Image 1 (cartoon, rainbow over the protein chains, first blue to last red):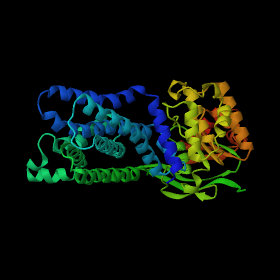
Image 2: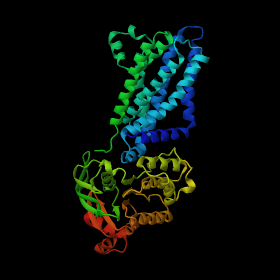
Image 3: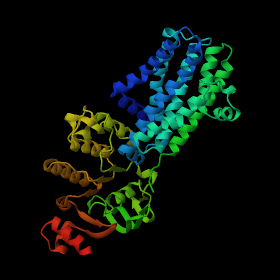
Length: 244
Length: 237
């Protein structure tokens, strides 16, 4: 691994995204639009204060998963990956370069989404709103790293999009948005303990519901980050220098 | 300096249930341009991918610049251009070259040298997706020239180029070779065979001929490379 090559790769990915302003616009604005819509739907009820934090976990995770998995798939299909693997670029340089680039984008996305939720939609946050930004950022990185790994198992853009219902929707259903996780059947509760999004949602709910929940926030965020690290390692392992 | 840039001995490659290469043995002298010719599906691309380490070898050996093919130390010493232009179409020409240059550790002024060599200076700030097919091929070729590798492996670099550009590229190949770089170039176009120092003729994963262009014509008693190719492939069938 070589920090110079990691940074060069991150810079290259950001330069690619810069040539696609529509994607940047969608990434940064869509989460806020959806949050605004949710706040509007649940006007004059307490629902948004419960669901809002969970959505802050969901949108960065889903959008980053989609964008990253498709970008990485294009790299695999266009032949540039084969070229890079024949050059002195480490597998972790590539994966971490991608993670850094989309992480930078996720910072902007998280700032805008949290700012919009708190300032415009009036999301009631008991804890520090900056903590919301940090957790949303970690969630975005989780989506990025899962997307990098998932791209290894897809042969086409169609398949990548199918991974959304396969890999992401179950996590959404079991994440505690619809039914709190401790009120689920035991088996489902146990499964949800092993899904990264459950911990992401729990972290955000802890930030917004109680000021003394920092311990929970840190613990849950570390769990999410650990999943992201594992996905980085698995993603790097799926990169092969040669084919059989 | 090594006498041979590439030494292949009894090279066998199976992909799935296909025998793509069946015991190929040959050598490529340092500083030579070797043309890899043969009908499509004959194994040209697989042989090239084996040399750059992108294809696992089933049996036999391939020694490149004194090291086994695929050795990590070879990665900065070989330039490889695959058939389709493997560059980023959402970056400009210059951005592509700058990135690949950083990866191989080439000095930053190398980008300007290469832009002139592949004649893309006017297009340096254009997105690759807006370039013509021939120009995209040259961006891909340019990326392989960065860092002045000792061995260039080029898979059909002149496909889709007009005769003028093709001539210019072969002039470039010759000047690169004259500085001691070895080139392995595959082609469908038989008249390009005559521009090579040696020709490897592949068919069905076996080596039909390993000759100089003059020997090829002499052996087949034909006047041009197209006829020589048909004569050889026809005789083997």
